[in-house]
Image (tube, rainbow, N blue to C red; front, top):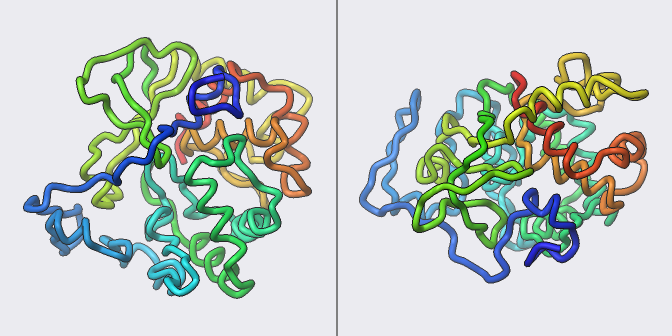
Length: 305
């Protein structure tokens, strides 16, 4: 077992990055000015650091956010959904992109969290713990609003770029669940894992929707993953569509965050996610070992969303 990841084996611990001790959230340089392509808005780092609600750089790209998405509810200790998942639903490092997912799927997952059937294989990992705490506080009407809003967001751009390499930037885990660059810089062997970092950390924390996550994968993993997803008695495309862009309530997989996809597969395999919502996935996820998951999610993340 990897240190700090006592609930998962070493072979999959890369998908659950988190330091054991609390760390401060990143802060932007206070005097720096931030702009986003296509937006008339300008903010200093100080303004962004102090913002309580998510900054909506491109409001014309989506309909008006419901209050629970834009502001949350401080009285009930509910953070705004857009604060983590972004107003356009694309998320941030280690926060999944939920924009354009089927409304029924989003509502189902919120209800699974609320019912206690959706857990992480590392229960104390902050992102999963936040969702497990927030979901039971949402009303049925709020769940419907959240699901309707995020499902209406049109996916306009990629969020991840997959790069096959045997060397990756040296990183360290942050307590909140992402990898940041090691203070001393340098590189390290990739081994059998996927390493995700932001193209530009400051601009990502500023909410720039054009900043990609770079996912480093072992050489050959995309080709191996393609073979795995198209073979077997129950190929992934039979439920998720021929181009992996979703079919019915089955969510799209193409171009999604590979760490998130890996956790989803392992959490189903381990039984941390249970119940009728994942019943069809239990058999295919159960057949994958940690090494195969690396290849599958590298391939899926490499596809055009």
